[in-house]
Image (cartoon, rainbow, N blue to C red; front, side, top):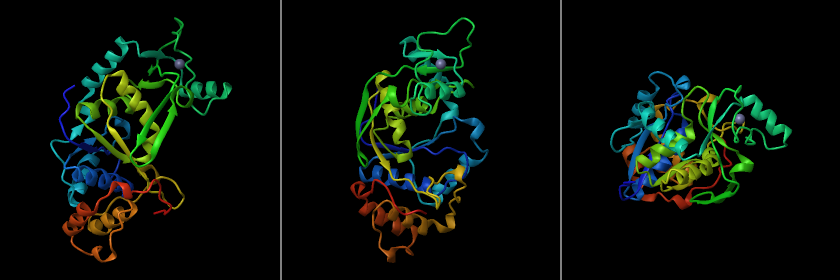
Length: 300
Ligand SMILES: [Zn+2]
């Protein structure tokens, strides 16, 4: 693999709606960390789950990022244009016997896990040894090893997950023939030469699957830093699904200040009303990944 030298980070929103404060935190954290390392910051539209994408949302996201003063490097990567690459890597995994067809529905997997007293939704390997002639393959799953995956997150510290016991063989190609999030993220990060991933800790749980996929595909693994996630007043993660307020570019300074505060950077009160450029200058000069807390108690 031809990986360019130097730090390369990225921000990868899904165009399922406008950006909200939770996405701003990830954008700010990944951007400042990349620039602090004199690195590049790439943008990727994760529009692989087409039924959930909203027409026009991708453009709106780009406009919002511009209004907030972000400057990304190079062209925006668009997942929906990269299907052929994903298909090729999927066949490579198949040829290398990492995958098997699975006939189970989601409901059946939940029932099987319950029967075997496994944690909710853990796939117990039901179709690993092959399907009966009367069964129809629905998905393609990746065989996971019977061992723990351990890694050190730059914010969350040492992490560990036993893939077989805590996740099970996971889906690579879905029943609707779309490629799964875990696969496309790993492919895109590798082909874009991403060296460092800074993202929300709601994705912490996906990291071992991605690390294992990188091993299967002989890709080098990036470094990971998982930021605390913003919660709403009910304690749920802010997301488009929880109807988090869209970002309002008129509020860019106040929002950027709040994001820096959320990320433990202690911006002074008096810079809150400074022009956006001044706030960004302050942020670049003061950014410390080591000051970012693992979690935030404050609910937005
Ligand atoms: Zn199955």
